[in-house]
Image (tube, rainbow, N blue to C red; front, side):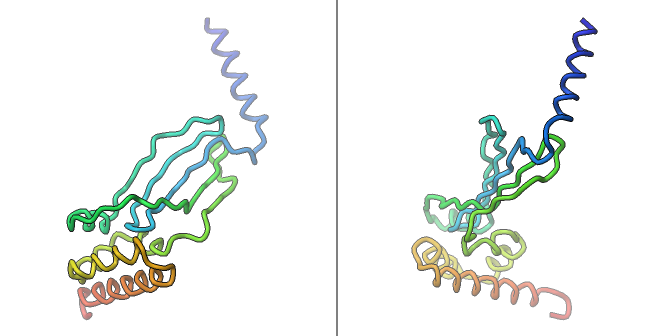
Amino acid sequence: MRRFWIILAVLVVAALLLIPSGVHVRQDLVWIDSISGSQKRQTAWRFGTASSPVVTESLLAAKYRKLGLKWEPDWKNVKGTYVDAFGRHVGSAHGWPAPEIYSFALSPDMQQSYLAASSDEEVRELFRVMSSGTEEQKKAAVEAACNRALGEYAATQPGG
């Protein structure tokens, strides 16, 4: 029995060494909800299996829910990282263009500052634009939200 395990271990090591380093065995995927900025992550394995998606709700999404706003997430792929059998990065694939809310979605501090500086009506208006506005309106709304968040952040800092 011990001999079996030794042979198996040798075969596994040999197989791993023979796998070309550029061949991926897993892909780590990330999506952003273009309305709320929530994130969804999943790992897909080369031979067809995948982990269950893990959703991280953004602060903005939590505020939308608190205000009674309802929406179906509009998931946009923003990242796909390919990894080989040794855990090394061997490639990337990104959905393009990223949704307008992308830069805002990546910073919980930015969202927190925006929510602290905004009225419920202003948050509802952001929701309306992110749900049904044109690309230009969405871009302008996110830029305004970022500016408001940065202003709030600066005002709360010592010497601000």
